[in-house]
Length: 258
Ligand SMILES: Nc1ncnc2c1ncn2[C@@H]1O[C@H](COP(=O)(O)OP(=O)(O)OP(=O)(O)O)[C@@H](O)[C@H]1O
Image (cartoon, rainbow, N blue to C red):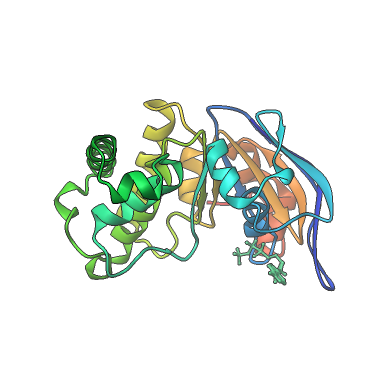
């Protein structure tokens, strides 16, 4: 579904990503892990088209997305959540979710200002969709709560909800459990697995929390200093000495990442 081939990204003197290649198959939960500054978020920013690589290609369902602008990427069916939750704090949960639908709505300013029946129908359908997402996230009772009043864990949920409400083909989750406690982390793990099993979503995750990565991932790519240093199933990655060294600085006998 998503193919990175020999992608290099440079910022002034820094090579953030170097010759990176990987493939995310449809229906998979695919994780990218690596120490701080490894280049993970830069990968997401290339897919979202905020950054343009100095070299390499990125294809999505056979289409070269490097030719697209950020809003066109959303139309191709790629949605993302952000490392630092980026919601409208003064707006309600329901309204924040509706914002996630906005890029895919086809209404224009004239039909909206005239409040045509088709606009009312779209609005009704959008609200129905938002309630479906809130049900999925078990946050329906928070629909009319302002986001700034919610604990961080729930704000993260809303951020993920905003990514999935437009029924994208590929969901990018940037550190979905950063700052969450183990109970909240477990909830998000279960949610990601449901997105795959019940809705056949393809999910690309960046995450530092190994419990989540080990539980949800079909496949993992490990980055360090902008390069891929390993790839494999969670079990393979957990025991890979190169990966352990990147995280811990040294390898002890029988060491594994947990
Ligand atoms: N816009 C930018 N301008 C300059 N340097 C950047 C920019 N974005 C990222 N970098 C640099 O690129 C490298 C990779 O950063 P990136 O944020 O992709 O790493 P990361 O693996 O996501 O790190 P973390 O886990 O801490 O979020 C770092 O050295 C970072 O300082």
